[in-house]
Length: 395
Ligand code: GLY
Image (cartoon, rainbow, N blue to C red):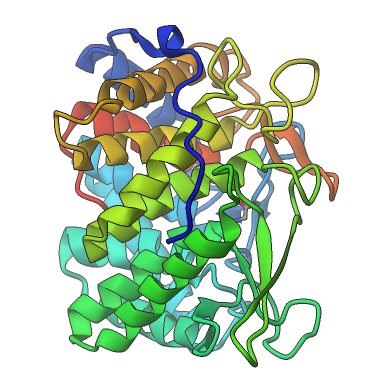
């Protein structure tokens, strides 16, 4: 792997301590999430929240976007923490739409098959042994494999594989889609899924992560000769800036690939990626939507904060006690979760059907700016669940 600069922790005193988030505190925070889920269950029975809210209210859409499974995943988390069958039934009711989506190829021209099938069908399989769900997820893994370019060792993110604007474009977010392939390798015993995922994450480490441990959002590879081309942003502030959510996807995603491959270099890299992220957190620990901004009036992205909080906790689970910055990462995560729960939820916004306010979907596209977004809600919930139990990954 190439040499990447480690900034270290620039303000260690900021992470010396963290609030004690007791089980009771987290359970109370979870109560708010369950309240919102209960309220949404009728509206999102056979429909799904749109990726971002409009005036803090999610419109209902069909299972057509990359984000449907965050809602289904929240239902599974709700089932796990409450044991209430109504959540299991609601999640199971949705599985048919994932089956239909993969069988009929409804908006499946995307690497986000990973998100879509991990939090819906794989979660169902892991929690309840549902073999129909397993088979839908395996079909999704096969379709994701179609997006893999062998010579470049990458999975193309979006769109038609022959579209010149998208051909050979990989993105940092994809690190979170790889568990679908690692899982498929385990279930089928076929190593091709593992090889594709592992090759992709190594290419992401080489090319998407810059020398200073920040990330490009997207990076073009020449799929004919396998050579790297150039980085470009889609949702960040500029091609050279570091989109906060991208860095957060990396933090969680590199750890997940380590879990499946045992490749410690991914952890070594991730420490640097994490340091870059936490060095740019403002006073209240909630990142701006792009890490170029560290103060001022730009919007925060609460969803990036929630993703990073989960990624940091998972990283800590995999670091030995002797690891120098393990406590720093844990404290960073707890401070983020505390700040989200104290200042970013919709508790004082009863009209909202979202959980976390103040996220940004895509500022350059003018989409979902200072709104709720459904993955932010999911990851905030996952973070809280992690704090009350030894949560087994759906990923
Ligand atoms: N994966 C797309 C996003 O984070 O907006």
